[in-house]
Length: 469
Image 1 (tube, rainbow, N blue to C red):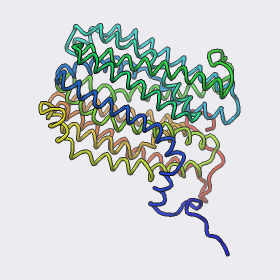
Image 2: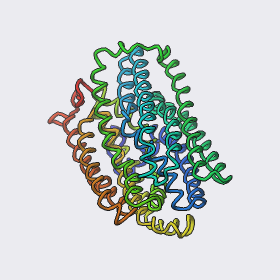
Image 3: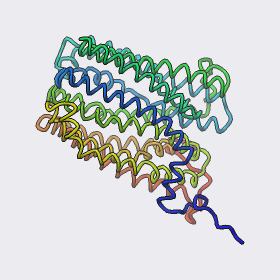
Image 4: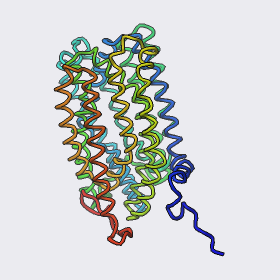
């Protein structure tokens, strides 16, 4: 008698089986560990934000958020996104069995991140007075903007550190560190604000969190590199990357340019809102972003677990495995989670009016639009890991440029007359619909190209930064 194959062996079994396998998979366990820590951290941060918002009121709460947003935007303008390159090439070099290249790539990642953070500090010092007057609308906080930016130096090291830990599968360690750092930040912010430190308390408490997470991740990642690949990454010579360095630098250049244009919608929304509408509207919008930030804290771990798997399949030329992983992730996780996020939209008014306070009622439409944005982002959260694994950084740059230019135009047009609601609507329509739909069409095209006409996987898959993938 012939034993029929199991559905998971044939790729069949329907949606229910796909969901069941997704829940039971190693991917779900790794993502669950990391997402669990992130979720606890985000819940604590959310509760902290509500307390701070009530204590400070919309205007002072908006001022604190704008002080943070100025150096954060400057850092984002220069961010090379070395974490994306680090995961891709650490995975590739590990698969090749070249630990000297792994250590050199680690050193390169840290060097670029640290250099950018120091440069950011200098630029923030130059523009702090202008930013305090025009964006924050409180010149007396120019010094506080510079002080906050110093915490970005240790924080900048966390990108490469998390890449190392992701490639090595140390998701539990990442979860614990993030949770501890968030706990430090929450306790510091609440303690300072409730004892009368006001806006300064928010800034100093947030700085404590950034310093803790940056330095702790650095220590743990350095120990991991030593144990897994031997030696100290600080002593790794860059010549080990010979023959690959040009491709890596091109990848970094494209991702840096992509982040440069992404900052237009990621950070400029708050700054332009402060400029055109003032700190009160910024406070309403900041509350909306805080409410939906919980969703982002869940998606980031999922991407952190998915990306190394996709990068490994792409590096090995295994298109069939890559497609299976995408299907399990989309049907078993991202689409159901996206649908769940949309269920929060009708609850926004009840939560804001009765929990945060009636003075924040104008933030309700912005919060609803931001939940709609996050729902679409969650459902398609496999796109960025897939494109980075493919090395499709040229596409990401082009799509981000078009999307963010349109977004900034929308911010400038609607921030003044429509305030927080106008900015949130712009983000949803352009970032939540246009950008994601564009990504769906491009992903379909690239995945088709990775197969021969008869439907079998090709043996070689190439990137668009030069070299093979």
